[in-house]
Length: 480
Ligand code: 4AD
Ligand code: MG
Image (cartoon, rainbow, N blue to C red):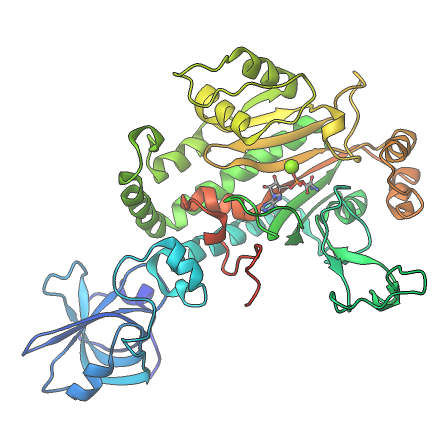
């Protein structure tokens, strides 16, 4: 009397054995003699065919097995008569566990637009597309832990509530018990912080890096994998207000070691998804191909999803400096043939996403690691290069995604770090604990952050970051 999942049933050969399936009805078709129910239980992309003879199963029950209803079926496994699967289940009993009214159930057995499904995010995981994305997402998370564990890195849990701004960019959500409409004010009109985190002004973390550095300077090689929060304009297809980030941090690594690790790591997890999520990826590839048909020819991807993923795992990433990237962009004078050529301003300005796309998709046609950015456009903790103008930063850009990884070697010299903080008005008093790492047993170290949803976006071939996280946090999206 034990349930079998469809994923396991697919490996069984017909032996006339009795099995029990539980899941949700995708479709039901009937004629006079027989009813076919296509069942999905989330364990894999396949729906499983159940055959019910109305002389065996009460027709009233079969009528309630509508799209979306959950049912329990007990039956005999038999060779299939040609439904595209090896076996099917001859129902001996069907029990309706939960009905779904066909008039009001939003997910119908047809193709829904992703926009419609975003508005029905509470039910969209029941569709083939979203359940496939969530299984791939799970596998990627698992393989990330597997990769670091095998290499002897330790998983460190860094705090979600913190008083520090790791990126120094001021894009933080405050943690507060205040009613935002009626904050208790002091007599001078300023907000009374007594209502904050036990009288301390705190925010949701933007990155676990600084705490990760503390751990790396004790355990040598660590990584974090947790939620991070950015109060930046997240109205793009690449930004979320709440996203998950993987941040390895390694003592005794320089900038090149850091790049080597990041490249090896990305190739490992993408290969792992190719090996273990083949059916889901093939389904998503098919979905993307259908979507592509409606696009203008010049916007279509030349390679299929599986080909794109394989290409990334098999080819060396291009490595260039910011200055080299800037030269390329400067010389790519815009003309009609070079679609993404974009005029760039003087040396020192940040690359726009159009620049990144040009470099990755048109110029190199492969992932690119850009290093040694001008120090003015990067964070305070990055190691300052000898030239006095650049820092040992690196960004990894992926086709169709843009920046997927950001990292650097860290400034391990106390004086240089303190001076840079002073220049940027970052309080050295409040960051005393961070500076202590440079005071006691400082060491060269480096690390990077991988945006998990951007990785899932790349691997699944989906087009919008809201569609690769179960419950996206964007402006206007916080109900559940
Ligand atoms: O480049 P970022 O801001 O770097 C850091 O936070 C460093 N502390 C990482 C480190 O060195 N340990 O963010 C890292 C990555 C980006 O490359 C991007 O993939 C992702 O995080 N990311 C976002 N993903 C979704 N929505 C957002 N709003 C994101 N902001 C950054
Ligand atoms: Mg960045």
